[in-house]
Length: 72
Image (cartoon, rainbow, N blue to C red; front, side):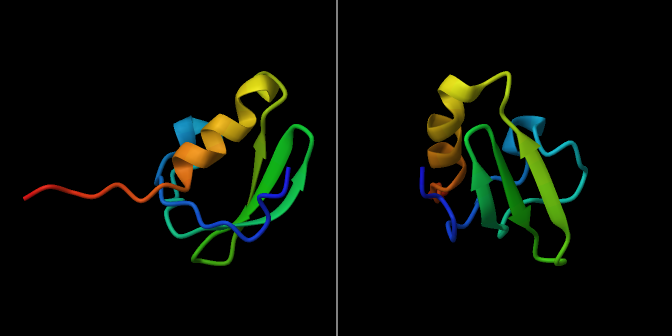
């Protein structure tokens, strides 16, 4: 459970950030068993609660941190 320092490349994060701000480029700043705090490019803290998805937390974070290569 050490995701601190990872960069998010998903702009939406499955809507769990409850914000319209683009979350791409955010960094995971803090983490607990069922939550994380992102620091956005605009320096806003965003709290993401995984209490309903605790068993999928690591899977979601891994997917959000992957760079997706766009094909021409």
